[in-house]
Image 1 (spheres, rainbow, N blue to C red):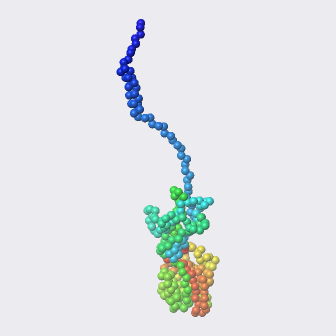
Image 2 (cartoon, rainbow, N blue to C red; image 1 turned 90 degrees about the vertical axis):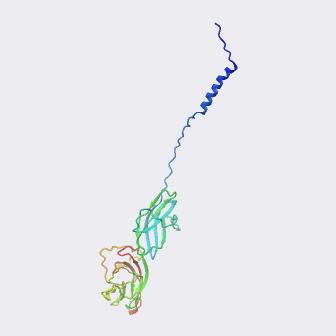
Image 3 (cartoon, helix red, strand yellow; image 1 turned 45 degrees about the vertical axis):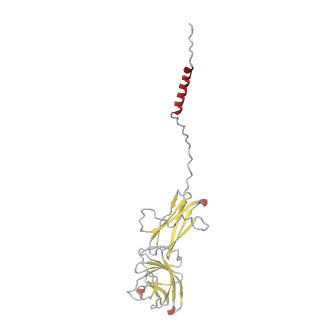
Length: 291
């Protein structure tokens, strides 16, 4: 049987080619398969810690306050500075208050990176404050906080008392910071010579109606600035005490304020004797802490 031979016309030959091109075009315009996602494993970044703070203490005298603390900056560790907070002790801290420093405090300018200080002014004597310090890491993502310290700005000074009770400089009113006569109802202390010995006494010695201040001898072995606190419980001072140069004395006024005194000099003889006293007065009643 003879095989048949089909002869395509020119139009018939083009048809398969057109179908192939049409299918290719449709496939190329369709949705593309998503590229495979490459997951890279990130190494955890090193945690930078803030240096720790310890030993915060305060000196607050005549409206000037100085803070001192230690910072554990191992091997000169870089850090992001400090914020210093000083607020009234009765302040309700519902939110973090504004720091005392307007910009991040870099630390003091001495050569010891582990010993820091900060000076604040304008605080009110007789008002109790609380303070704390925050240290930041170099990237400020970590922080450490010091203990909170309560303090009260003290009033300090030096007075010279006359032995003559009628003189206007024979007594002193600590609450108002002024000289008065030892016979004045406002005087907290007086100087007298009993049996030839110079003494510090309560004005009630002259008149029972005058101030009944009480005294306690601290001794000469304690430095004036190192005697910072004491117990008020059962304070049993005496009406008068012998004065000795270099001795420290604690006094409690009739209105329950405390002061510490240091006898720095005794001069003159007889009725011309005078005593020079350095003092630190605490203007908060019953507050037994000296900064």
